[in-house]
Length: 139
Image (tube, rainbow, N blue to C red; front, side, top):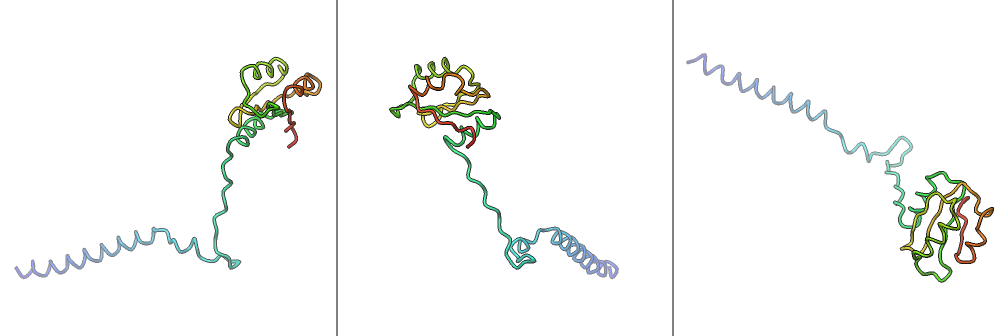
């Protein structure tokens, strides 16, 4: 019985030391959050770089056409500012068959076209009689 009483304190001490070692190891693995806000070598605090705002509407559609690597990008809209209808779409496709990609944008009021053909050598003058034509090729 005397031997059993001596083992209990010894086991408790071993358990405590083991627990302390495990806790110390896990504490060392945790990331120190104060490092990310600490001053850098040049004395300024670390700052997250601002993210570009996502493109919306016309800019997003224009970027889609530009990603097609077309030499020419044209934007067409009605002269009266109304939305393009089926007849307008048919007219554009008939008189600018060289345009590869068409994207309707601005709630149907504009259409963006991408092509590798110079429309000025084609029917651009005819298209300008009915539509406002804007050249976005180099912009």
